[in-house]
Length: 244
Image (tube, rainbow, N blue to C red; front, side):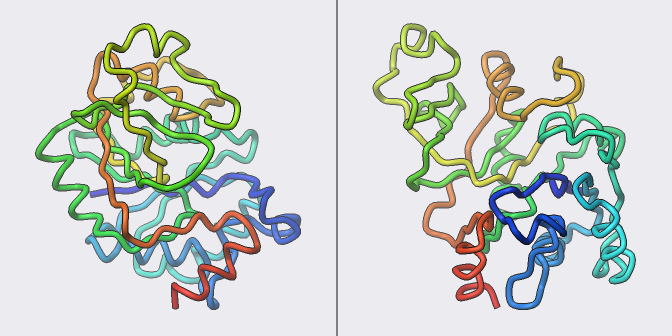
């Protein structure tokens, strides 16, 4: 199995560190987020990984080369000309996933200890277009799922915005939709590349919302396990207390 780590983001919440470095090289107890997630994937026999680079791209490439990929074979998707967000970044790296095998996608600033094999097994049994790792936690933006754990929409509870715009009127079970917070981890069938209509810079959230009416996008709930979005200096301190 192959994987992609999103490492191209500007990491503005991690300033001032990201004024001079990419967020992927932020350290938790002396190990970078990039190294930690490469080794996390290795626990599940995933040694073929592609990373996208934009912000201080050369620092990421040099670190990978200096450490021989920490034992993994790491390819580079170069976005130095323009950062493409999650959807555009994945589409640019489509060549890496040619074939019929599902693959894993992760945000590099997510640290977790949940059993990825359980999520992979569920995906292989249910065969959706994609499976999204989620938890029941407080945040401002949520994916909405029906009783079958199929994606139905998206909601920003801070602004009241919902997608699609007619979500309430078009869903008979609107009141029973379950709000789940996305963990930044996906398992995706490569067939998705033939369905993505967007070009350039776009989010995977919009891709899923476009495709959910015709293809199942499922959830995998790992509530109760460790999960830290290492996006701020404060979260690095918190992560250091947990991940040694």
